[in-house]
Amino acid sequence: MQKVFGMHKKSSDQIYHEIKERIENDRLYMLTDLRRVKRLVAAKWILDPCEVEQIVREKLNMTFAQWLNSYRIDRAKELLGDPQYESEKIVDIAWKTGFNNLSDFQVHFRKCTECTPGEYRAFHMNFRKVMGISPAEYRLEYNR
Image (cartoon, rainbow, N blue to C red; front, side, top):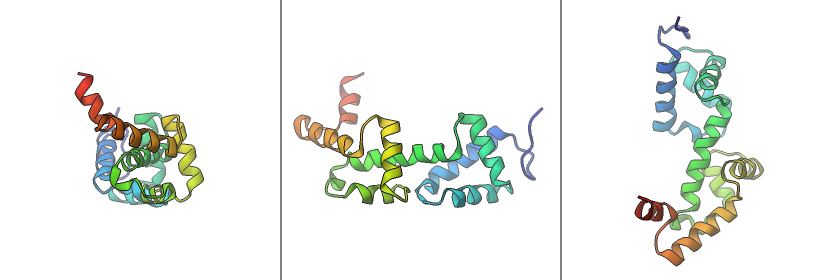
């Protein structure tokens, strides 16, 4: 039997995909207040924020905060590897990606990438200088 959430007769799969789409399209992961993001998402489907947490846990086996942080880290990696942001301070990138302090950003970044934001940036910038392309472009070109 399908679980019915809020006032909708949609399955958790359907709601999850709609939540994911909203998070990505509206870039809600960039907001620093996780509770606010959860409330914004929940309000659209007339859900309790706890139901949003439950759906994410059920689908991804992670908390809502962990899920949003994975989007934030992916965006931070893009910025840290982009030559346009080479002179941008790491703390500013942390803020731009939705983290409200440098310490949390560094902890989550290291947990996801096994290196610090500074190490990640240095590798990508040096790789680009030596190879003339980014590591991602290199993987596409040479790892077919």
